[in-house]
Image (cartoon, rainbow, N blue to C red):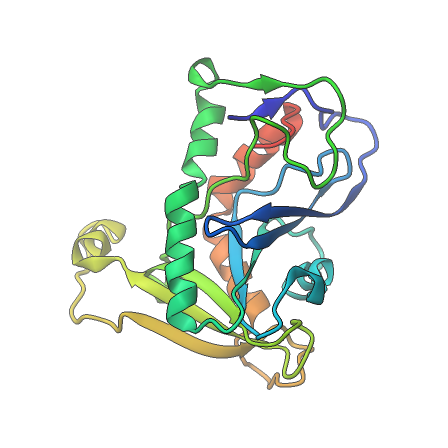
Length: 260
């Protein structure tokens, strides 16, 4: 249920900053959303998101430089990040634990298609109105975080619906400054044919998941020339869907939505 009547993105001078929203995930654990947005809209994150799991034995939100992480994984510094990060903390978890958690979170919250539908069909959407400016970090009654990405399938990894990252360190800036990039949940032969409009068929079954250890960016100690990075992976995934999520986000922002 969207919350509206907040400050609008009008033609006045706009100031942007990095925002942090604490929340509780579907399993009752503390989690964080971090994104870059207008100063007057601290509760309106972008629709496109990436999940990062912290699995160190001492993994907690307090041990992570959250806002700096957003900058570290932002590939094109000429533009502000038009995605959000969702950070989850599963001390001692293994890869399959993170995958199971991701699926559970997506099942609980759905996808951002629901938010786009609310924008496209205002007559059938129930809105909650508020007249006072929103408080940073606190989702008002009636509001919610946006849903998750319906599918990351595309490009070289068209066979996989899901994408997430796993950081085994207490803080992302520790150690090699690298993460596991996990792709999972096969699209299957029928979806594959739909994606390529019947022009290609899935000739052989790919592995059920792919895990690659990659540096966060080209400043990471472990980086070697031409290495794929977390920042590039996010950029490529986001670029493929920018037309899907960018316009709806701008519409919500310019219409004075407080949160989704």
